[in-house]
Length: 272
Ligand SMILES: [Zn+2]
Ligand SMILES: [Zn+2]
Image 1 (cartoon, rainbow, N blue to C red):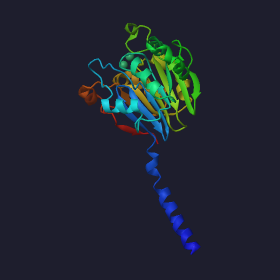
Image 2: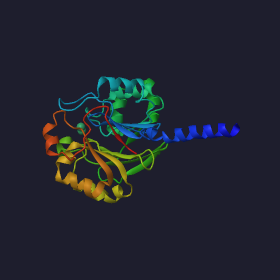
Image 3: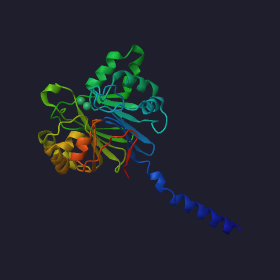
Image 4: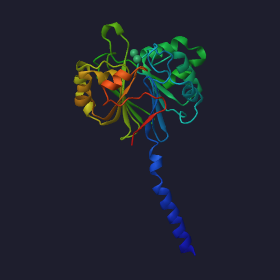
């Protein structure tokens, strides 16, 4: 009798284990809008450029239902460990919703350019002071070596790469992040980086130290010879995907059928 029971339990265990691959899909990137992406590995979740109000009439805003779920901490947009801000432009970051988000989510940390943190401080009241202990401002100069640090179990590297568009962008601080939730789940986010060899070539050995599963690049990398060279020779990623794709992207997509693009909020890519 005991033997039969044991056999039954063993069979149930085998059945459970064989259904595990479904759980593995917990490792993925979910598109939010413009350059907003959520990356998760099981329970660990991070966000890039999730809260912004500006679309310049050309880019996707995060749909209201996703934004509401983010603010309310509703699954799957719940329990965010870290938010990363690439730079303080209105199509990537808005201080008011970001401050509200940090209030509503007391365990979430924020990593952002000093300019973005200054914008938060400018609207923060006295009651917000303690919240800044959960914020890491980045103060790198152009050409500074990348920095690395850990928050919880998340390994973070950041390097400042100039914003696309040259001098007319002034001194906006644009950050590229390489973030690892574990050794397999390593992603890169580039903000509005300039696809110029002169900025990426000198960092060749930095990119080569670690293989990245998914690199999320502004779509203009796919429309530039130098951008392709940077992907092919330097960045060392398994897969490249375009973000910041204009809503009217038909011509671009016809010209670059090879480019994988995030264009529909809520769509995902696996990170297994
Ligand atoms: Zn920008
Ligand atoms: Zn932008």
